[in-house]
Image 1 (tube, rainbow, N blue to C red):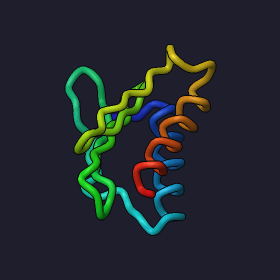
Image 2: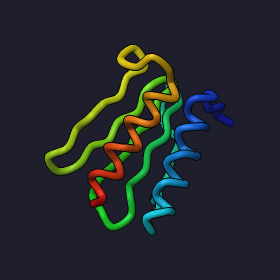
Image 3: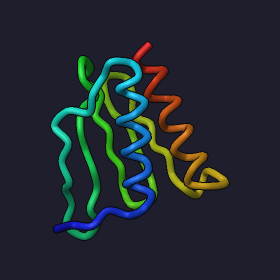
Image 4: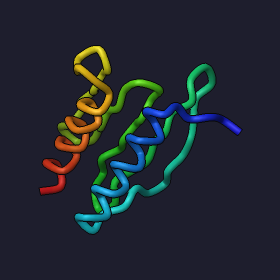
Length: 92
């Protein structure tokens, strides 16, 4: 079984919790990758796809392609906060 990093686990839990609070879900969740295991899935009732890599996250969809890299934040927790803020903004 492919292992997820601590960052991936925390980011996914935070994402699923935030989505549930707005009545959304992470659909078609998969673990993919050869040299690096990453999580991908689609946000319910949207065409937005999320990707959670070992130390970054991204969201892609119509007119959206935003990447959150750990080097751009003072901590991985701040990266997760920024990622979730963008996800929630897209749902409004």
